[in-house]
Image 1 (cartoon, rainbow, N blue to C red):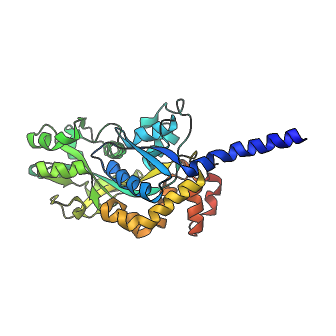
Image 2 (image 1 turned 180 degrees about the horizontal axis):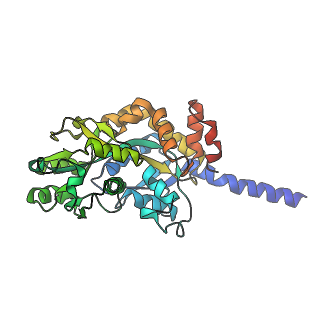
Image 3 (image 1 turned 60 degrees about the vertical axis):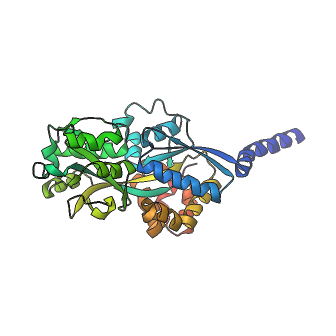
Length: 339
């Protein structure tokens, strides 16, 4: 009997030890997007703040070719945190597009734990071509850079083009070369996007310094077709690009992004991460406009993010705990809390 009791106590200690040890110091390998991207910039700011507020967390930020690489990297055991979107979660859950056939390689499934902003996707052309290209369908048959192959923003724009029957020629280029290629006419269109309706990626800002580009909006008929196909189209302030994009109104397609931690990270750690963001959100938004949405309505952003992916991936218990404290948790999500 004493032996059994002793073994039970040892088992309880072993189960509790990782959480206690992690509370003293936890190494987190957190994957993010490529240098020059909006995701990389925002993760740098987040990691810097968390390292100051939660020194027990040792965050090793690891740039990758794109957000999808971080989600796959988590699923195969390479990362503890990832830069995940509702787009990636949809593809993974449905074994489609960039995740087709991937389930056989996955060792674990991502969860959602911290939603940060929406990203709004559109298209741009050279300003001199505004009379030539007046709709997205006008780009059919043309060379268009819709973004690096792994990127979620590319997946969104390519899906929209597919809905509209835009049969363009995909042309992959280095991000720093987009402006010069557009100037020379080697590409006729390229992907543009904003974060949190307030800023854009560093590489798009640099493109605007090297060449004069203009937003190419989908027509009213194209917007209706996209909406019918299940894609939301919203108005984005042209000022988000911090330059003249030769359009009074900008129409983009939004989706949700977050910096998530896997379910192996204890509930208390994820809860503290969320609380640290809540405490320092004004500072983050001052440094990086992409944090503007969580500054204005952090609870609402988490709710909308959860709703976008609740049927695709489970919710980290740390996020569920925070939402319950805020009175924003929906009881119908109870079965979707990760164990």
